[in-house]
Image 1 (cartoon, rainbow, N blue to C red):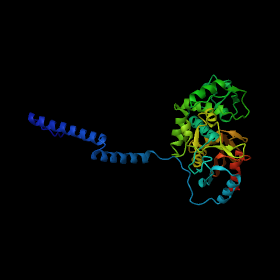
Image 2: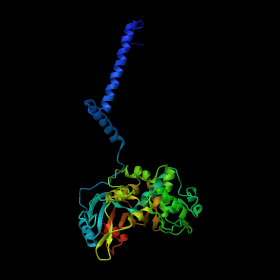
Image 3: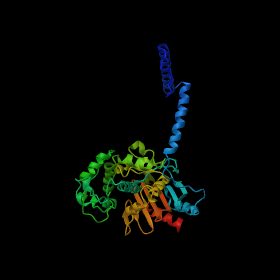
Image 4: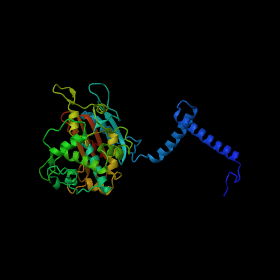
Length: 389
């Protein structure tokens, strides 16, 4: 083998050789430290450029967006009819229309902060209320798909103190047929662990089998998600959906500062004018976890199509989650032969969604004001008929 040092090297030569090596190591280390930590040096400028280029290359390979609804350049053929319908009902909010899997219409109307002049835009954020149920339900199914839980698991496996827990399955909680309910007034809190413990202590069971929409089901399901996944519910949803889909106008409302990012919800007053809806913070605090998410209409449409199209969980598991032998509530949506619908409200915010059974066409509507006489259960279905009749 070849060695750069002669076998019979003179001791002076060896001393000189190793001195050079040590000097080079010291100089190299000094240059690295200068480049990395002396922010005023030219060396630091080049270090940042090289590090940034490497980071961008790595990021472009690893941080791929999981799914984006394609946006068509063509105007939806029913756009004028939708414009007229929104104007006729005086709806305030944002409307997204999906045709053949593409976003063909996105429009925002009305004010985001009443009585200020600021208007809703296509990036305006709304609290999505019970539209979050499908997100929670699909997360439960994802953990089931990974073998971390079973839909036949009894609630007692996770919350043995809940009344009747040994007779209630996760599947029944997903479908609101668990018989669970709460009649006591929940605490006003920003702490999900506090609310979770309170729900565990105050939940009552009337026997399984009959449908009754009760928030306690999805509060406890959010708790099960964080128990099984090992991550807080919020962090699980953030990493698995919001970050993965690169949603720019979505997140969690954790306090009043976060709530200020949203359009203000308002309602008709007794005097005939409009006033800001009150009690939003208290309403939200009673349903922390599964009712914290805010989104724009486009981000909500992206999330729903991502889940329903079998990209978040397998298509067979989508059918298992929301499919039903008869029309009714299943896995966060109301299923029928031809449609999936969602309708809910939280304070002055309302959501109304209708998507066809083929998961290619639909209407997503988020509002921060709905006039008296217009029910949220009517809005998206009415627009859907206008668009797809």
